[in-house]
Length: 507
Image (cartoon, rainbow, N blue to C red; front, side):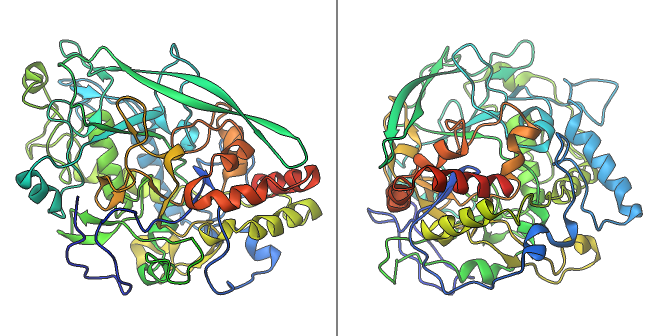
């Protein structure tokens, strides 16, 4: 297993990965996770007018299908031009090289989608395939496996290495390819229905996904492979999350569960390519990227097969000879995405604004907020932060009171929501799959904007693999350290259930 290594920025002790993880439970609605009893001192209480502006001065007043696609409300007119350029590169598809549109060529050879917007529809969340015949445009599968010998363990212990991928298929499954190259495999899903009953007899049907990978093009994968299925999350508020002081996130960590309440949380420690150093993980389902720019470059590389100064290698393995021989769109610097283009897209992603809350003064919404806290959901869905004072390049995000409903930490959600082995069984809770994150751990997803998810994308689904069709379904999938919160919700009567959902819909 991967060891923790030197810890240059954690004021709290971290343990090595030995057996049971020091996770925490997680409310995966945005994913959609809710939780157990609060573990922190009472947070600052803000008035309703302040809470309504979920993104502080960046907040936009919008409730339509384009509500996630607007720039920070406090952005100057001069900077809006950069935002619009970034939007163009985010929305428009990339093409196969060589092409006359040399700013946009280099797609593949292996890829999942040809544009950022294909996953993040209207800049919002994606959806899981409805059945085996549906496409998987909004879904990707990360691949990892345990170390098999001392040399592999030494490689895994290298802080620059996120995980060990499949020897043939690498670290991400690409189900599309350019002509002359075979896609790696086909992703299919079916669902088994399960029923959960509330204390008053009310029943909710849940769907448990059964994932299958067909038509492996380059031979069978490693038999100890772990699959991490991930539906695209919404892109709003990323710059604000990036601006939360690291110390404030670390202060919420309780990796050893020192107060013995059953809830813990810990940061993921990841490699910052630009700084060439360990950093706090903030972005991705397992907090595997430290900055918006690196998250953007990683998505270009893994999802579209595009190289950049941050990720200069493609995904062709030695077994994929046609992939290695395929043309690319590299410029004179040997990469397919120019630095200025990457910066434009990162700027765009950083400044997609969070919509204001709706119906915040409604009595049912306020009651639902109280029930959210009563169930302990705010133990991981930390309600508010104040962002750091930043320079002119990040002026929109500077010194803002924000309400993201996340602690940005990793939490253990138990076997039902764990990554999967090839046979469909849950991977072990001590198997490392992305830097320090294990197969059962997920970063608490922000809940802001979640009430508009199906306005922005009518097909949007919830949780990391999109199995939940409604917010209530997402709550009821909570397990592991979140079991006690789920069990508390199961005691809610009809009016309490309705109030909880109305509160979530107001976010």
